[in-house]
Length: 430
Ligand SMILES: [Zn+2]
Image 1 (spheres, rainbow, N blue to C red):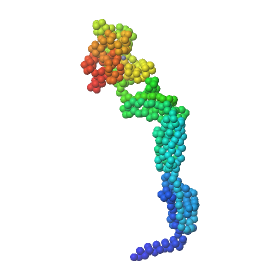
Image 2 (cartoon, helix red, strand yellow; image 1 turned 60 degrees about the horizontal axis):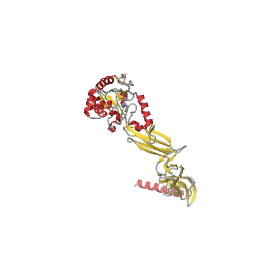
Image 3 (cartoon, rainbow, N blue to C red; image 1 turned 180 degrees about the vertical axis):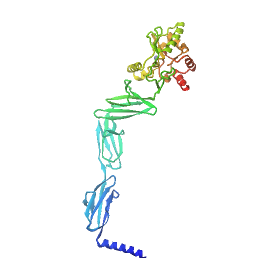
Image 4 (cartoon, rainbow, N blue to C red; image 1 turned 120 degrees about the vertical axis):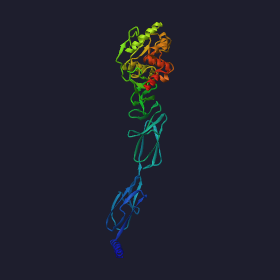
């Protein structure tokens, strides 16, 4: 009971004090409502200095404080001496951003009619003039969109550049399986395109080929050039190469393997009765050739080795000479890249010395016919038979034989497989 009386006393005294000292209220509101956080509302003593402030919510901009329709302050913080009940309104307007667009090349823009209000979507569309095409939107040198109709959420001023290029300034891209390409353009000081090849897991980039010239124009993943017309490029990817041991008679040597810069240590020069050009092969291959040549001789056929061991660097020069002459894709059908040639093993020979060397017609020569029927008995396998390009990666080469040893050559013949399939199987089994 006593406690309640005491509480009531305190309340009465406080009320008396407030009214007695002319308590006045400061009432704050914002226009529109919820557009700002307001501080400073409450009861004050008449004659007291009061500071109120308005913190605009995101997307709103403070305009000024008004009282009864009259502007009393243009700053977010307003300090005054309060005398009587005061109603203040913080006025705000939506924050709007400037969107400026500039054209590089010939083109125009369609803006959305709505102003770029904070937090709202805004659309600007690039419209190329006749004979031009839209490439991309950039801002501060970065590509922000490759869509002509660009929609973004307004959160600041924008300074956009739309790039338009003559319609025939274009890169037609063909992209191999195993990766993708990102294309970006810049127009300063000239129309420059940058292509970046990105291989998929398990694949590697394998060069840019110009479709017109059929030449490999760059080997690096990032390729930049000044575009002055239409250009057709092929971005090549291949499965990551598997290393093979060049010293092994059964090494799998093909488009998906590499023996690196392997060089055999036991090369010997063939005598002129086996090779007019005195080509080199590994010693056991030279021995096998001697025996085979004697057997051929007995059948009235003279064997002659026209090409034998070729080093990594020789193969490099050879491949790029062919690539320059016939185009890189065509060259790959008949010539190996360095590190991928069976000739680098020192166990491979090309027979020849006829007037039909290195042609399908070699198969009809006495050497060609005899080798096809007999070479396997002496340890030699025909690497690239007719009609097997899809498997071997190479056109028919009736002159190209690889020594794998007599037992294996007999097993290979028995298998009916191409040599590379047979060796793959053999290597998996071992
Ligand atoms: Zn060959």
